[in-house]
Image (cartoon, rainbow, N blue to C red; front, side):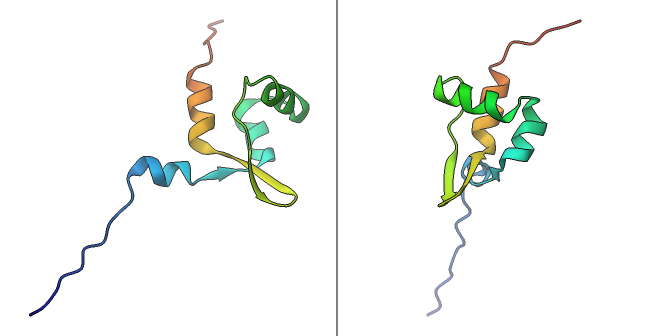
Length: 76
């Protein structure tokens, strides 16, 4: 008798939520400055960072994408 093992692949949302973005990339991605990002985090108007290590934080890419999608668009 042989048993077949099936690999379970995580859903796409789980894989995407595991992608972390560090501060420099968040600044480039959003166009916001570092102090503005932290001020918006304190005001609950920007996604909170995730602590990766004692002195390292990053943001989940999916959280930033949801935040960006919820922003008003301006046409010039």
